[in-house]
Length: 148
Image (cartoon, rainbow, N blue to C red):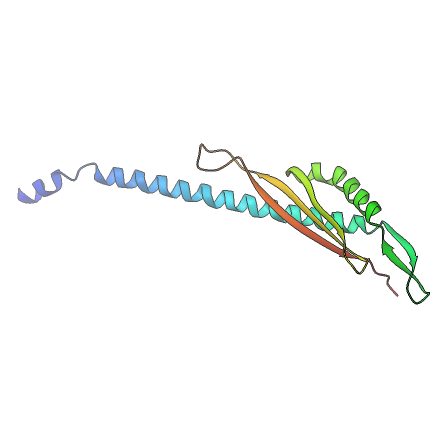
C-alpha cells in the first residue's frame, strides 16, 4: 500500500512534461524553418545581384587605352541603367520583398562591375516569436572580358 501512495501525487505530471516538450519542439521547428527561409532568400538575392552585374556588362564602350590601342570600358551611367532595367523585370519574379539597389560601382580597372542589393525576406508571422520580414543583403560582381 505504501508503494501505491508514493505514485499517487505524481498523477498528471507526465502529461504536463509531455505538453512542455511538444511546445519546445514546435518552437524549435519554427525557428529552423525561419532560418531556412532567410537562407533561401539570401541565395535568391545573390543570384539576382549576379544577374544584375552580368546585365550591367552590356553597357560597355570602346575607349582608347593609354598606349594607343582600343580597349573596352564600362560606362557607369549606362551600367546603372542596365542594372535598373534588369531588376525591373527580374525582381518581381524573385519572390523577394522591396528589392533595392545599394550600390552600382565600376571598379578602377574599368571592366569590373559591382552591384549591391538589399531586400526583405518574407517569413510566416507567428505572434512576436518570428518577425514578418528580415532584411537580407547580397553583392554580385562581373568582369568584362573578351574570349579569344
